[in-house]
Length: 442
View: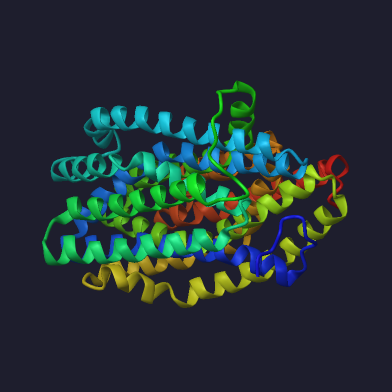
Protein backbone atom coordinates (compact mmCIF):
# COMPACT_ATOMS: atom_id res chain seq x y z
CA UNK A 1 0.00 0.00 0.00
CA UNK A 2 1.44 3.35 -1.09
CA UNK A 3 0.59 5.98 1.56
CA UNK A 4 0.55 9.60 0.36
CA UNK A 5 1.91 12.49 2.45
CA UNK A 6 -1.39 14.33 2.00
CA UNK A 7 -3.44 11.65 3.80
CA UNK A 8 -4.74 11.73 7.37
CA UNK A 9 -2.41 9.57 9.44
CA UNK A 10 -3.97 7.16 11.90
CA UNK A 11 -1.71 5.23 14.28
CA UNK A 12 -1.72 2.35 11.80
CA UNK A 13 -0.78 4.50 8.81
CA UNK A 14 1.87 6.37 10.80
CA UNK A 15 3.51 3.11 11.83
CA UNK A 16 3.21 1.66 8.31
CA UNK A 17 4.79 4.75 6.77
CA UNK A 18 7.69 5.05 9.24
CA UNK A 19 8.46 1.37 9.84
CA UNK A 20 10.60 0.98 6.68
CA UNK A 21 12.82 3.87 7.80
CA UNK A 22 13.00 2.49 11.35
CA UNK A 23 14.02 -0.93 10.06
CA UNK A 24 16.47 0.73 7.67
CA UNK A 25 18.16 2.63 10.51
CA UNK A 26 18.27 -0.45 12.75
CA UNK A 27 19.62 -2.61 9.95
CA UNK A 28 22.26 -0.01 9.09
CA UNK A 29 23.29 -0.06 12.74
CA UNK A 30 23.40 -3.85 12.82
CA UNK A 31 25.85 -4.13 9.97
CA UNK A 32 27.96 -1.50 11.71
CA UNK A 33 27.91 -3.80 14.74
CA UNK A 34 28.99 -6.73 12.56
CA UNK A 35 31.92 -4.58 11.39
CA UNK A 36 33.02 -4.10 14.99
CA UNK A 37 32.37 -7.73 15.85
CA UNK A 38 34.70 -8.99 13.12
CA UNK A 39 37.42 -6.47 13.97
CA UNK A 40 37.27 -7.18 17.72
CA UNK A 41 37.17 -10.97 17.46
CA UNK A 42 39.34 -11.56 14.39
CA UNK A 43 41.89 -8.74 14.49
CA UNK A 44 42.04 -7.89 18.20
CA UNK A 45 41.27 -5.30 20.87
CA UNK A 46 43.96 -2.87 19.64
CA UNK A 47 42.48 -2.82 16.13
CA UNK A 48 39.01 -2.32 17.59
CA UNK A 49 40.27 0.57 19.73
CA UNK A 50 42.02 2.13 16.70
CA UNK A 51 38.88 1.97 14.56
CA UNK A 52 36.83 3.58 17.33
CA UNK A 53 39.41 6.34 17.81
CA UNK A 54 39.32 7.48 14.16
CA UNK A 55 35.63 6.82 13.46
CA UNK A 56 34.36 10.09 15.04
CA UNK A 57 36.51 12.13 12.63
CA UNK A 58 35.06 10.25 9.65
CA UNK A 59 31.52 10.76 10.92
CA UNK A 60 32.10 14.51 11.21
CA UNK A 61 32.99 14.65 7.51
CA UNK A 62 29.94 12.60 6.55
CA UNK A 63 27.56 14.71 8.65
CA UNK A 64 27.24 17.34 5.90
CA UNK A 65 25.28 14.86 3.80
CA UNK A 66 22.97 14.13 6.70
CA UNK A 67 22.43 17.85 7.31
CA UNK A 68 21.56 18.63 3.70
CA UNK A 69 19.42 15.49 3.43
CA UNK A 70 17.25 16.19 6.48
CA UNK A 71 17.18 19.98 6.04
CA UNK A 72 16.70 19.73 2.30
CA UNK A 73 13.92 17.16 2.61
CA UNK A 74 12.05 19.52 4.96
CA UNK A 75 12.38 22.33 2.42
CA UNK A 76 11.45 20.12 -0.55
CA UNK A 77 8.45 18.49 1.18
CA UNK A 78 7.20 21.93 2.25
CA UNK A 79 7.56 23.16 -1.36
CA UNK A 80 5.61 20.15 -2.64
CA UNK A 81 2.94 20.83 0.00
CA UNK A 82 2.66 24.37 -1.36
CA UNK A 83 1.96 22.88 -4.80
CA UNK A 84 5.21 23.84 -6.56
CA UNK A 85 6.66 20.54 -7.77
CA UNK A 86 8.94 22.11 -10.40
CA UNK A 87 10.69 24.25 -7.80
CA UNK A 88 10.97 21.22 -5.49
CA UNK A 89 12.84 19.29 -8.20
CA UNK A 90 15.20 22.22 -8.74
CA UNK A 91 15.98 22.47 -5.05
CA UNK A 92 16.44 18.70 -4.77
CA UNK A 93 18.87 18.56 -7.68
CA UNK A 94 20.85 21.59 -6.55
CA UNK A 95 21.33 20.16 -3.06
CA UNK A 96 22.68 16.87 -4.43
CA UNK A 97 25.23 18.76 -6.54
CA UNK A 98 26.29 20.74 -3.47
CA UNK A 99 26.80 17.52 -1.47
CA UNK A 100 28.95 16.03 -4.24
CA UNK A 101 31.21 19.09 -4.46
CA UNK A 102 31.64 19.32 -0.69
CA UNK A 103 32.32 15.58 -0.52
CA UNK A 104 35.14 15.84 -3.05
CA UNK A 105 36.79 18.69 -1.13
CA UNK A 106 36.53 16.82 2.19
CA UNK A 107 37.96 13.65 0.64
CA UNK A 108 41.12 15.44 -0.48
CA UNK A 109 41.55 17.21 2.88
CA UNK A 110 40.90 14.00 4.82
CA UNK A 111 43.52 12.02 2.93
CA UNK A 112 46.13 14.68 3.74
CA UNK A 113 45.41 15.21 7.44
CA UNK A 114 44.45 11.68 8.56
CA UNK A 115 47.70 10.95 10.41
CA UNK A 116 47.90 14.17 12.47
CA UNK A 117 44.19 13.81 13.27
CA UNK A 118 44.77 10.26 14.54
CA UNK A 119 47.55 11.49 16.85
CA UNK A 120 45.38 14.38 18.04
CA UNK A 121 42.69 11.89 19.02
CA UNK A 122 45.13 10.08 21.31
CA UNK A 123 46.48 7.35 19.04
CA UNK A 124 50.02 6.25 19.85
CA UNK A 125 52.39 3.63 18.46
CA UNK A 126 50.62 0.87 16.54
CA UNK A 127 47.24 2.60 16.96
CA UNK A 128 48.37 5.43 14.66
CA UNK A 129 48.95 3.05 11.76
CA UNK A 130 45.61 1.32 12.39
CA UNK A 131 43.74 4.65 12.44
CA UNK A 132 45.42 5.95 9.28
CA UNK A 133 44.90 2.70 7.34
CA UNK A 134 41.22 2.51 8.22
CA UNK A 135 40.57 6.24 7.83
CA UNK A 136 42.28 6.80 4.48
CA UNK A 137 40.72 3.70 2.96
CA UNK A 138 37.20 4.53 4.08
CA UNK A 139 37.32 8.22 3.19
CA UNK A 140 37.68 7.34 -0.50
CA UNK A 141 33.97 6.40 -0.34
CA UNK A 142 33.02 9.67 1.37
CA UNK A 143 30.98 11.10 -1.54
CA UNK A 144 28.66 8.05 -1.88
CA UNK A 145 28.43 7.91 1.92
CA UNK A 146 27.23 11.52 2.03
CA UNK A 147 24.80 10.88 -0.82
CA UNK A 148 23.51 7.79 0.98
CA UNK A 149 22.79 9.93 4.04
CA UNK A 150 20.92 12.40 1.82
CA UNK A 151 18.84 9.77 0.08
CA UNK A 152 17.61 8.33 3.40
CA UNK A 153 15.45 11.46 3.73
CA UNK A 154 14.71 12.19 0.06
CA UNK A 155 13.38 8.69 -0.63
CA UNK A 156 10.75 9.34 2.06
CA UNK A 157 9.79 12.63 0.40
CA UNK A 158 9.49 10.68 -2.86
CA UNK A 159 7.06 8.39 -0.99
CA UNK A 160 9.44 5.44 -1.40
CA UNK A 161 10.49 4.58 2.18
CA UNK A 162 10.42 0.86 1.35
CA UNK A 163 12.98 1.39 -1.38
CA UNK A 164 15.29 2.96 1.18
CA UNK A 165 14.78 -0.10 3.36
CA UNK A 166 15.54 -2.53 0.51
CA UNK A 167 18.73 -0.65 -0.41
CA UNK A 168 19.84 -0.68 3.23
CA UNK A 169 19.23 -4.42 3.51
CA UNK A 170 21.17 -5.12 0.30
CA UNK A 171 24.12 -2.93 1.30
CA UNK A 172 24.06 -4.28 4.86
CA UNK A 173 24.12 -7.93 3.80
CA UNK A 174 26.85 -7.13 1.27
CA UNK A 175 28.92 -5.46 3.97
CA UNK A 176 28.56 -8.48 6.26
CA UNK A 177 29.59 -10.89 3.51
CA UNK A 178 32.58 -8.76 2.56
CA UNK A 179 33.58 -8.44 6.24
CA UNK A 180 33.61 -12.22 6.49
CA UNK A 181 35.65 -12.58 3.30
CA UNK A 182 38.13 -9.73 3.80
CA UNK A 183 38.67 -10.02 7.56
CA UNK A 184 38.06 -13.67 8.42
CA UNK A 185 38.97 -15.52 5.20
CA UNK A 186 41.63 -13.30 3.58
CA UNK A 187 43.01 -11.86 6.86
CA UNK A 188 43.08 -8.29 5.53
CA UNK A 189 42.61 -6.73 8.99
CA UNK A 190 41.28 -3.19 9.40
CA UNK A 191 42.03 -2.48 5.73
CA UNK A 192 39.58 -5.23 4.79
CA UNK A 193 36.97 -3.82 7.19
CA UNK A 194 37.29 -0.39 5.57
CA UNK A 195 37.09 -1.79 2.03
CA UNK A 196 33.97 -3.79 2.92
CA UNK A 197 32.25 -0.74 4.38
CA UNK A 198 33.37 1.49 1.51
CA UNK A 199 31.96 -0.85 -1.15
CA UNK A 200 28.60 -1.05 0.64
CA UNK A 201 28.47 2.77 0.90
CA UNK A 202 29.23 3.02 -2.82
CA UNK A 203 26.23 0.83 -3.62
CA UNK A 204 24.06 2.73 -1.13
CA UNK A 205 24.90 6.04 -2.78
CA UNK A 206 24.80 5.07 -6.45
CA UNK A 207 21.60 2.96 -6.63
CA UNK A 208 19.24 5.73 -5.36
CA UNK A 209 21.03 8.21 -7.63
CA UNK A 210 20.20 6.06 -10.66
CA UNK A 211 16.59 5.81 -9.47
CA UNK A 212 16.19 9.58 -9.20
CA UNK A 213 17.74 10.08 -12.63
CA UNK A 214 15.65 7.49 -14.50
CA UNK A 215 12.53 6.27 -12.67
CA UNK A 216 11.33 8.59 -9.93
CA UNK A 217 8.04 10.40 -10.52
CA UNK A 218 7.77 12.51 -7.35
CA UNK A 219 11.34 13.83 -7.36
CA UNK A 220 13.74 13.95 -10.31
CA UNK A 221 17.24 15.17 -11.00
CA UNK A 222 16.86 18.14 -13.35
CA UNK A 223 18.97 20.95 -14.72
CA UNK A 224 19.27 23.67 -12.14
CA UNK A 225 21.36 26.60 -11.05
CA UNK A 226 22.89 27.39 -7.69
CA UNK A 227 20.66 29.53 -5.50
CA UNK A 228 22.23 30.61 -2.24
CA UNK A 229 19.00 31.24 -0.29
CA UNK A 230 17.51 27.70 -0.49
CA UNK A 231 20.96 26.19 0.12
CA UNK A 232 21.32 28.25 3.30
CA UNK A 233 17.73 27.45 4.29
CA UNK A 234 18.31 23.71 3.85
CA UNK A 235 21.52 23.95 5.87
CA UNK A 236 19.74 25.93 8.58
CA UNK A 237 16.87 23.42 8.66
CA UNK A 238 19.26 20.49 8.92
CA UNK A 239 21.81 22.19 11.14
CA UNK A 240 20.43 20.37 14.17
CA UNK A 241 21.12 17.01 12.54
CA UNK A 242 24.63 18.11 11.60
CA UNK A 243 25.14 19.49 15.10
CA UNK A 244 23.96 16.15 16.48
CA UNK A 245 26.40 14.17 14.33
CA UNK A 246 29.36 16.49 14.88
CA UNK A 247 28.59 16.79 18.59
CA UNK A 248 28.39 13.02 18.92
CA UNK A 249 31.76 12.71 17.23
CA UNK A 250 33.37 15.42 19.37
CA UNK A 251 31.83 13.94 22.51
CA UNK A 252 33.06 10.48 21.50
CA UNK A 253 36.57 11.88 21.25
CA UNK A 254 36.28 13.39 24.74
CA UNK A 255 34.83 10.14 26.10
CA UNK A 256 37.84 8.30 24.70
CA UNK A 257 40.28 10.79 26.24
CA UNK A 258 38.58 10.54 29.66
CA UNK A 259 38.39 6.75 29.40
CA UNK A 260 42.09 6.51 28.58
CA UNK A 261 42.65 8.42 31.83
CA UNK A 262 40.28 6.38 34.03
CA UNK A 263 40.36 2.90 32.44
CA UNK A 264 42.99 2.81 29.67
CA UNK A 265 42.48 1.12 26.30
CA UNK A 266 39.88 -1.25 27.82
CA UNK A 267 37.67 1.75 28.54
CA UNK A 268 37.85 2.81 24.88
CA UNK A 269 36.91 -0.71 23.81
CA UNK A 270 33.96 -0.78 26.25
CA UNK A 271 32.73 2.60 25.04
CA UNK A 272 33.06 1.48 21.42
CA UNK A 273 30.79 -1.46 22.20
CA UNK A 274 28.28 0.84 23.91
CA UNK A 275 28.19 2.99 20.79
CA UNK A 276 27.58 0.00 18.52
CA UNK A 277 24.77 -1.20 20.78
CA UNK A 278 23.39 2.33 21.15
CA UNK A 279 23.22 2.77 17.37
CA UNK A 280 20.68 -0.06 17.23
CA UNK A 281 18.48 1.37 19.99
CA UNK A 282 18.70 5.02 18.96
CA UNK A 283 18.24 3.90 15.34
CA UNK A 284 14.62 3.19 16.23
CA UNK A 285 14.12 6.76 17.41
CA UNK A 286 16.08 8.20 14.49
CA UNK A 287 14.17 6.08 11.99
CA UNK A 288 10.81 7.22 13.33
CA UNK A 289 11.89 10.87 13.45
CA UNK A 290 13.30 10.83 9.90
CA UNK A 291 10.31 8.87 8.61
CA UNK A 292 7.71 11.20 10.12
CA UNK A 293 9.49 14.49 9.30
CA UNK A 294 8.31 14.77 5.66
CA UNK A 295 4.72 14.21 6.84
CA UNK A 296 5.08 17.08 9.30
CA UNK A 297 6.78 19.24 6.65
CA UNK A 298 4.04 18.57 4.09
CA UNK A 299 1.14 19.42 6.41
CA UNK A 300 2.98 22.47 7.70
CA UNK A 301 3.37 23.68 4.10
CA UNK A 302 -0.31 22.90 3.45
CA UNK A 303 -1.27 24.81 6.65
CA UNK A 304 -3.13 21.76 7.98
CA UNK A 305 -2.81 22.48 11.71
CA UNK A 306 -5.36 19.81 12.65
CA UNK A 307 -3.12 17.11 11.20
CA UNK A 308 -0.05 18.63 12.89
CA UNK A 309 -1.78 18.33 16.27
CA UNK A 310 -2.69 14.73 15.53
CA UNK A 311 0.83 13.84 14.40
CA UNK A 312 2.48 15.33 17.48
CA UNK A 313 0.07 13.65 19.91
CA UNK A 314 0.36 10.24 18.27
CA UNK A 315 4.15 10.49 17.97
CA UNK A 316 4.68 11.31 21.64
CA UNK A 317 2.50 8.37 22.71
CA UNK A 318 4.29 5.92 20.41
CA UNK A 319 7.71 7.11 21.52
CA UNK A 320 6.83 6.89 25.21
CA UNK A 321 5.79 3.24 24.86
CA UNK A 322 8.84 2.45 22.74
CA UNK A 323 11.23 4.08 25.23
CA UNK A 324 10.04 1.84 28.06
CA UNK A 325 10.46 -1.27 25.91
CA UNK A 326 13.93 -0.18 24.75
CA UNK A 327 15.16 0.45 28.28
CA UNK A 328 13.97 -2.94 29.53
CA UNK A 329 15.62 -4.69 26.58
CA UNK A 330 18.88 -2.79 27.17
CA UNK A 331 18.98 -3.84 30.82
CA UNK A 332 18.13 -7.50 30.16
CA UNK A 333 20.50 -7.98 27.23
CA UNK A 334 23.48 -6.03 28.56
CA UNK A 335 25.69 -9.08 29.25
CA UNK A 336 24.82 -11.04 26.07
CA UNK A 337 25.45 -7.94 23.95
CA UNK A 338 28.80 -7.29 25.64
CA UNK A 339 29.71 -10.97 25.28
CA UNK A 340 29.32 -10.85 21.51
CA UNK A 341 32.34 -8.55 21.36
CA UNK A 342 34.57 -9.35 24.35
CA UNK A 343 33.70 -12.82 25.66
CA UNK A 344 37.44 -13.56 25.46
CA UNK A 345 38.23 -11.19 28.37
CA UNK A 346 36.34 -11.60 31.69
CA UNK A 347 37.33 -8.23 33.18
CA UNK A 348 36.48 -6.36 29.99
CA UNK A 349 33.19 -8.24 29.78
CA UNK A 350 32.22 -7.16 33.32
CA UNK A 351 33.18 -3.53 32.66
CA UNK A 352 31.23 -3.42 29.41
CA UNK A 353 28.14 -5.11 30.89
CA UNK A 354 28.01 -2.58 33.73
CA UNK A 355 28.50 0.29 31.27
CA UNK A 356 25.66 -0.87 28.99
CA UNK A 357 23.27 -1.20 31.94
CA UNK A 358 23.99 2.33 33.14
CA UNK A 359 23.87 3.79 29.62
CA UNK A 360 20.54 2.07 28.87
CA UNK A 361 18.72 4.30 31.36
CA UNK A 362 19.10 7.09 28.79
CA UNK A 363 16.79 5.28 26.35
CA UNK A 364 13.84 6.29 28.57
CA UNK A 365 14.35 9.91 27.52
CA UNK A 366 16.43 10.16 24.35
CA UNK A 367 13.59 9.22 21.96
CA UNK A 368 11.53 12.30 22.86
CA UNK A 369 14.58 14.57 22.52
CA UNK A 370 15.54 13.14 19.12
CA UNK A 371 11.98 13.54 17.87
CA UNK A 372 11.68 17.09 19.24
CA UNK A 373 14.71 18.23 17.26
CA UNK A 374 13.48 16.49 14.09
CA UNK A 375 9.97 17.90 14.54
CA UNK A 376 11.23 21.49 14.52
CA UNK A 377 13.46 20.70 11.53
CA UNK A 378 10.34 19.56 9.66
CA UNK A 379 8.66 22.85 10.63
CA UNK A 380 11.61 24.60 8.96
CA UNK A 381 12.71 26.04 12.31
CA UNK A 382 16.39 25.19 12.22
CA UNK A 383 17.23 27.49 15.12
CA UNK A 384 15.12 25.67 17.71
CA UNK A 385 16.04 22.29 16.29
CA UNK A 386 19.75 23.12 16.43
CA UNK A 387 19.44 24.51 19.96
CA UNK A 388 17.95 21.25 21.23
CA UNK A 389 20.62 19.17 19.48
CA UNK A 390 23.49 21.47 20.45
CA UNK A 391 22.58 21.46 24.13
CA UNK A 392 21.68 17.76 24.22
CA UNK A 393 24.59 16.25 22.34
CA UNK A 394 27.37 18.73 23.06
CA UNK A 395 27.05 21.19 25.95
CA UNK A 396 25.28 18.97 28.48
CA UNK A 397 27.32 15.87 27.67
CA UNK A 398 30.69 17.63 27.74
CA UNK A 399 29.85 19.15 31.11
CA UNK A 400 28.77 15.78 32.50
CA UNK A 401 31.80 13.95 31.06
CA UNK A 402 34.13 16.13 33.12
CA UNK A 403 31.98 16.69 36.24
CA UNK A 404 30.47 13.28 37.03
CA UNK A 405 33.75 11.26 37.08
CA UNK A 406 34.89 13.51 39.93
CA UNK A 407 31.97 12.11 41.94
CA UNK A 408 31.54 8.53 40.68
CA UNK A 409 34.85 7.83 38.88
CA UNK A 410 34.37 5.49 35.90
CA UNK A 411 30.63 5.10 36.49
CA UNK A 412 30.36 8.87 36.23
CA UNK A 413 31.48 8.64 32.60
CA UNK A 414 28.80 6.06 31.82
CA UNK A 415 26.18 8.23 33.59
CA UNK A 416 27.06 11.37 31.62
CA UNK A 417 24.59 10.70 28.80
CA UNK A 418 21.75 9.97 31.25
CA UNK A 419 22.10 13.35 32.97
CA UNK A 420 22.51 15.10 29.60
CA UNK A 421 19.25 13.59 28.30
CA UNK A 422 17.36 14.72 31.42
CA UNK A 423 18.51 18.32 30.97
CA UNK A 424 17.74 18.14 27.24
CA UNK A 425 14.20 16.90 27.94
CA UNK A 426 13.55 20.03 30.01
CA UNK A 427 14.75 22.16 27.08
CA UNK A 428 12.58 20.23 24.59
CA UNK A 429 9.46 20.66 26.70
CA UNK A 430 10.12 24.40 27.05
CA UNK A 431 10.47 24.81 23.27
CA UNK A 432 7.28 22.82 22.63
CA UNK A 433 5.37 25.12 24.99
CA UNK A 434 6.93 28.39 23.77
CA UNK A 435 6.21 27.64 20.08
CA UNK A 436 2.74 26.14 20.47
CA UNK A 437 0.87 29.28 19.30
CA UNK A 438 3.18 29.92 16.36
CA UNK A 439 2.64 26.46 14.82
CA UNK A 440 -0.65 25.53 16.50
CA UNK A 441 0.35 21.91 17.09
CA UNK A 442 -1.16 21.85 20.58
